[in-house]
Image 1: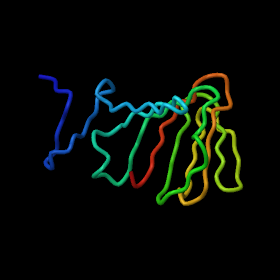
Image 2 (image 1 turned 120 degrees about the vertical axis):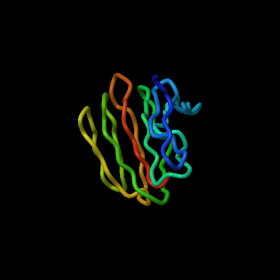
Image 3 (image 1 turned 90 degrees about the vertical axis):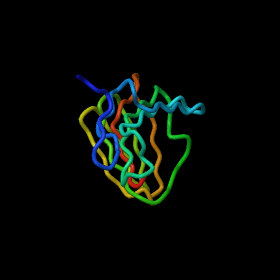
Length: 121
């Protein structure tokens, strides 16, 4: 017997099949975020599969408590953190304190696909 949802002793879902992900589409910039865990509200981090369309950005500069990590699966992402700027491509990664002002933009000719982790959620 094959199950799509597996629970551990704490009734937390361990596995999430891709068709069961929570999908969030931001109307202002058309960015898509698919949560890679069932319910991040009781977790220490929030991993997501994030798709940033061509010419889309983070909809302004942001700052908040925590840390962020990302891995670029496809495309070109310009990431600005405080005074640092870098264009990241497939295979590149980043890690920074979310308390620093940060901004991102797709500067390529295809969607940027990332694994993006924010801690805490």
